[in-house]
Image 1 (cartoon, rainbow, N blue to C red):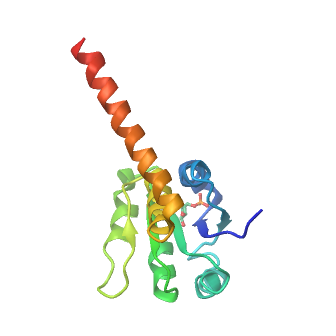
Image 2: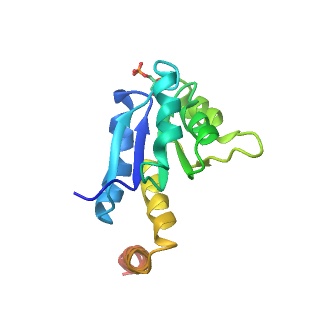
Length: 162
Ligand code: RP5
């Protein structure tokens, strides 16, 4: 198994049913990743250590998901130079708007690339694109994937028109 390039982390194991889609997208592109729970509020010291050590360990980007007062992606972004992709995890109340606003409204200088509420699949695909920018083989696979999306959408239109 090659060493992980992407860190997939979340505030709680209860986020995994949403975050699993990021891991599946990375699987599709055969990108090595690691998965862990790194809670900003329940294990702040470990969370800071994770962010500080991520680049040195060879990670190229971090996907961070959290719900409610979702401070994990932003706090990681404050201590790592790596790109951080934030996934707002919807909880029982507020339809994930709390998670979304907690992640998206970052101060200037500390960017988090925020995907839609529950949008973990796009987080995985965005991480793949970040790697693909410097990897021609992976970029070719991404272009194949995009062509397949085009064909699927075209087929659906054809079915409706028939
Ligand atoms: C957040 O609190 C986590 O990211 C999770 O979405 C939420 C609830 O966590 P649990 O109480 O289910 O562990 O920090």
